[in-house]
Length: 158
Image 1 (cartoon, rainbow, N blue to C red):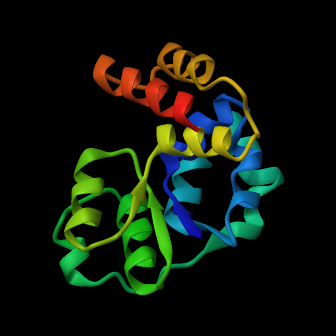
Image 2: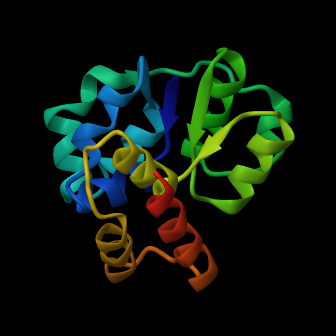
């Protein structure tokens, strides 16, 4: 599996001190330059991780096809989708609903922050998904109760 990741999953996983585990779970891990630029605007955990460890994963996107630009998404989301579409085997790590809808419409596989947390549990890197999901809520990640319960149920099946 290959992953191209947007800012939101990096930011939230950095706050949970989990982002450092994610690149090794994939045969290729990519951060578009627009995502890097967005993250580096703030002096937080994600900024520190990108500066210390993340620079080796940065990739320039080049020209964005008009059919992706027409969705009028943010620069990071647009670049994640463009890389995923142009390169076989990439999963797009996106939390934004409009970006996910765009990716789905282009037959791009999508995972979000919650899915990455579940994958960390499946790989044995973390043991308690519910703790991390509660922490996510406490740091401002919006997750409705139904999705929260579904993620907990899935984690118990891993």
